[in-house]
Image (cartoon, rainbow, N blue to C red; front, side, top):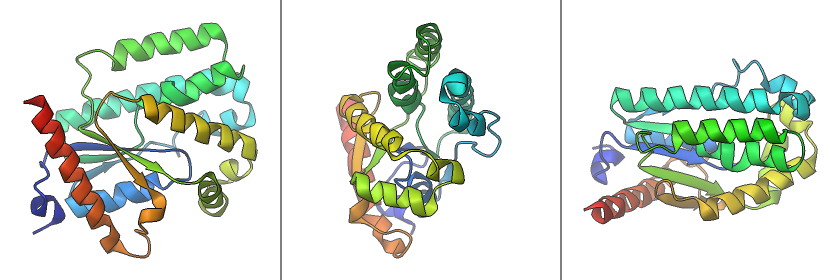
Length: 222
């Protein structure tokens, strides 16, 4: 019996992993998908035509990058639900507007016109009643020092070269964003409470919490 069956997690559930850069979203996605025998959905970084350009020039490429992410994540979300669920998803579509686009607008690296165009498109695509929201969003959190350490050790070269203040700003914005997020149920997990890389068994308490949250969500919908 696998962990999904042991804890009665629906075979068609869709779970999204959220959190700032360096917090371990990809690692958690793989571990949970393996434990639940679900498929994975990762953001397409290597094929992104704007990412390297963006890190070199935020102001010029921020709008292009956000539009690209929005389109790709929307298509992926649609594919997941058309497939029938049973997915763990690395990063949510909600972070794009709630954190990244908003941050660039407020810091002056995205114009007001571009920001309004982007948010209007996001609301039309994602905030409609027809958009399939995930069953649960898992928010990975930890201290800024621990996350910065992970970026320095495991981050991509363009991330390691990014100023610390950028990561601090993003960290604080993530904390504010998750406190207001209500598009679907949220399970907050601190990265200091487990070590999946060293101990695969540490994923089971997380699966147990997922089962509890999904049960509560189904109960409230009745």
